[in-house]
Image (cartoon, rainbow, N blue to C red):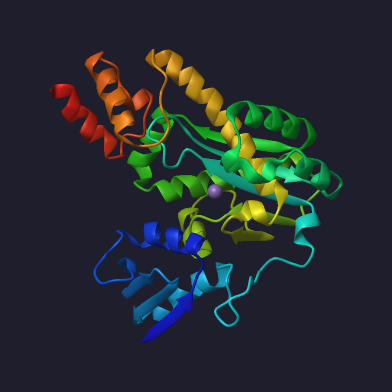
Length: 301
Ligand code: MN
């Protein structure tokens, strides 16, 4: 059995991390992995090939959630018309790719009355914003909108990674918790929809949540680059970044050095220096990253 779907580049990136290692097996191939007896091959063009007994089922979970329709290549949505003006609870996270610092998820509820106001803060292009801009916007957002932050500082993060062994699961658990908290806060008001900035297939997301006492599922949508679909996700991203910045300051103070973000060589050097000073990396960093081994090696020399 074989199924082919077409996805956009953001979805392709998510699928690459979902199915395992990037691959250069042949020209044009971005990743190749196996899941549920299905071999999945992603191509630079956005074409993804599923081969095996569960091919169509495996493909379906991406197909539904993907923002690109294979038939016309245009944006298709599971999102209702006029979505961007609706009262939406949105969530996003930061810190996933950074060795030092927490994993932070924020959920923000933006009702219809506040959509324009939040939009006008300039929350949409959060990637280009400076730290002071983030701080200023976040402070306004949390004045205007009900929100909740789930912050996993490194000691907690590392403990949970030891338990679950999977960063995407930690993200799922954190999103679910943040959303549940806000839903509780705004009762009896309910959002018209919930939007999670997508990082795994919905089916996988809910598999990660099995056994949780509260699982937020009603009216939940997933969308890659969700911040383009509703300001609530953009606002969530800003609030998460604001919170993460504050934690980074506290951790830097504790470490006695400004902890850099990212996971590059600079990060290895700072980590090595912390080790040489007898510091416990687990207080500051996500230990499962390859940077830990590199820093240990550097510290010995
Ligand atoms: Mn995101």
